[in-house]
Length: 80
Image (cartoon, rainbow, N blue to C red; front, side):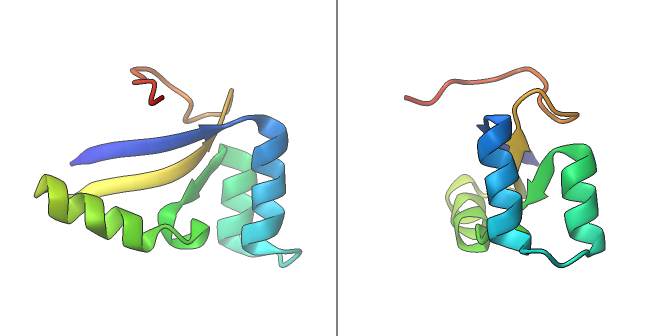
């Protein structure tokens, strides 16, 4: 598989947590806050993930990643 992470600054990440989960305390929200990763299904990116899988002909994992968080690890490829 191929893993794609959309890295965002911490303040933007916190805003996205509110946008995607609201104020509901769910396991997914708690994990996203603790781990710094929002999975594509919670971020409204399922269609993009599916399109990437079709185009690349392989399984794709796609998530929003908090810059400086647990999953903000190299290697990175900068996209202009």
